[in-house]
Length: 152
Image (cartoon, rainbow, N blue to C red; front, side, top):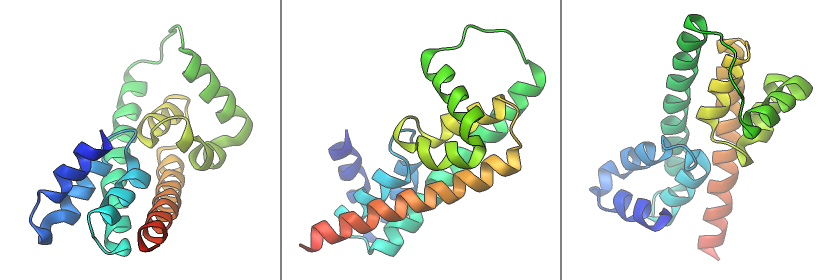
């Protein structure tokens, strides 16, 4: 899958590859961290790759946050939660929005995590701020690692 996404981004004209990275990074499970790696791998400057990956992931995550807020306002119902949702709720209760935002990137995509936290009743503003910080940190870390590995 990553190879296909890399080919997709590389197929864009050189001046528009940053846009392809933003599109790819909006996909859950690709996120800013794999998007920045793909950007660096196709030859974008690490700052451009990381920036585009962060923007794509943030736009997607914000859409999920606001969508989850609308759904929560319309329906706060009793449902049989999945195992992942139960684990995420326990993590949310223990670490709050900052902890879940920074630590959950390895478990679930930021879009799903952010939507779930808003569904649990967290502030849209707090979730958005902490998720943006997390997306930037994870994207920068992976992008810089990729840049270092490619230069070696």
